[in-house]
Image (cartoon, rainbow, N blue to C red):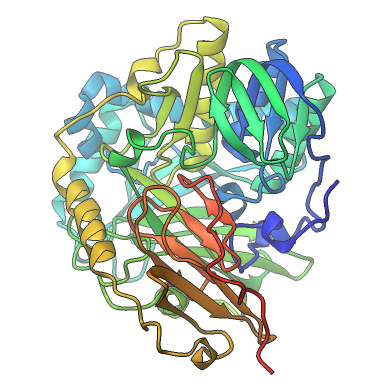
Length: 527
């Protein structure tokens, strides 16, 4: 196997609790030969592994390739809620899909939780899976009637729900949802890997699929995998340049892991309905859970403070400042000791609130994608495992039309396009910090700036050892200008959510190609 780099472990500077608690991460060989198979899957997160697991259980020959290590993408940066309580309210889903289809949406997420529970038992996966209650509290900025509307819509969808007392201080009454669940996502992935390999499936890590077509893939090292079916499960599809990226938008979300005395707080899932003063169209919300940690403490995992990627103008708090805001909110509602972990993740918000799972639009019928997690990636990824398997083996599935990637609606487009075009304008207006005559040596340790070099816009970052990393700051997807993310030390694209490490390596799609070096100054240390 090739030498392991930190960037292969996770798509950012901060390690999540999930990634750090399974060190060293699971490493499998890189692909070193041409192959032929029935199904090739690109992406080693929960979506890709769920599809691979279901297909191998159905007796299909499967090869999965992952650019980094298993779980090194967004699955390793989630908070791992397994819920039927979706981030998009059910009364809004009813407007988009109607009552009957909304019932199927609820059923699909309930089936996903049941699937994970059965798989954990069947494969004897030690991943801390447990059923817990969930509580949705109305945010003070939200209309009081929205809780009643959600209660009624959830009941029509067949979800077990009841009115409940205040659970978050100052938030008033809430809704209680029994039978939700949580788990350790990376431990679950490890168990899926073992089950896939046991059934004859093949998994290759540190293997970048640089070319993807209906005939298979070609890796960056030049090896080919020919396949009858191709599944792209890369969070944001790297094989679809335009169609899907006009129907979903990327957000950055933040997480803290704080220590609390063991068993001092009952295990549950907590959410609020979102801050409508911050963003009345797509209000950022908070989400909290408890995880096992050690013999003396549990881990309180609290997330929120979302914003469109590379755009923090909603409250002018930079990426690295979001943790402080999250800590302040969490202290208002929960008691905890010191903060042990900080990390961030990426959420893809589709225009109608539901993931895109199925055949890739404007492509051959044997190419499939999974994207648009909408903040409920754990269940959407599991649904993908069941649905795409049925499509490949020719079995009818009642969710096919609901999750069809080619669908389009104007019912939810106003707030969506407001976010999209706002980001595009911000990207277009972004000017370099410096021109040619400003010396690169002015960039201090831990600092990044953009400037023009011989007509090319460049991004330069000086690491803590004093080395310069100088790359093009133009996204390799569609040419948008990149913005520096000082929290995760990455170059981020506001247009469609692509992200690159400070060395220029692509770490989030839809871009599938690294940034080019701006000059020979890359990794040169000033003396």
